[in-house]
Length: 373
Image 1 (cartoon, rainbow, N blue to C red):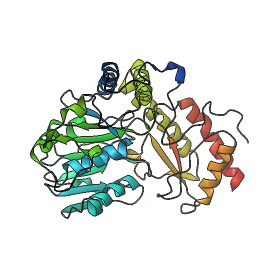
Image 2 (image 1 turned 90 degrees about the vertical axis):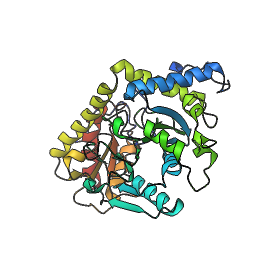
Image 3 (image 1 turned 60 degrees about the horizontal axis):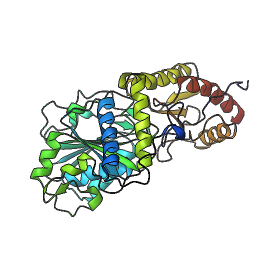
């Protein structure tokens, strides 16, 4: 039967994602708008953002935090162009974004001594093959496959190489082993529902040592440049951004971070996302025609929840028809899976999604499946 109740908010996009519950533009501090980002007031607001970020994400005090232009993609490219070269590189890829970083390392930076550890959609590669003396590049959470790395036990505690991680859809929703990371890229547009175009780059002391002792053989574009006269550029990590940031986006991010802190911090955000996954898991267990893309339950992402139809695993028409019908009904927007992956639906389950909305959505998927098959 056609469900009677609908989600209060139909936005289940995997990026940019839904704003925090109760968000309103009226709640934003706009005193910084129209002012120079170099002014003392705007610098204070940027420092406030990075301080909240450190506190909410539990980033170690000796790690440096910077805002980078170009969202997570540019933050990750900054890390690739700045750090890679002096050691062999292991690339772990199980998702479209891991493939993109592998392409850039092989075909743009043209590094020869590389080792690609890859897996088909829905699986993780053999992480035991990662070499502790090599630099490592990987994504923590595969947004196009719904597969997440469940822990960091496979990372050697005394690695010689650097660890470069694309963590965009993992931070704010999952426990994260900062002490085993050296360069972490993410943005606000995923877990916080923030506005796009700004990235974050977090560096360990070990990464800063690499910047001070190694100069890449290629020219580095200004927006990727973390050094000045061959040494670590401290200013970039003290609020003096490489280019002009949007202070409106800064204030929007501060609002989202403050919301996260008001709930009880990271443990509460993680619990909200885990509960969204639990709601879907219970529905999938009772629904014989659908399954998770992630084959191992331990690797199911709680943010990028990817589901495929058992009767048509290679046919995009079924998920397209269901996604279109639910959007027409005003039930769910933007839930069609990433087109670079296998056919599937993708539900964002991050902490800004109300579990009650996730519960309300699932009967509609059941209804839509009956309508189009």
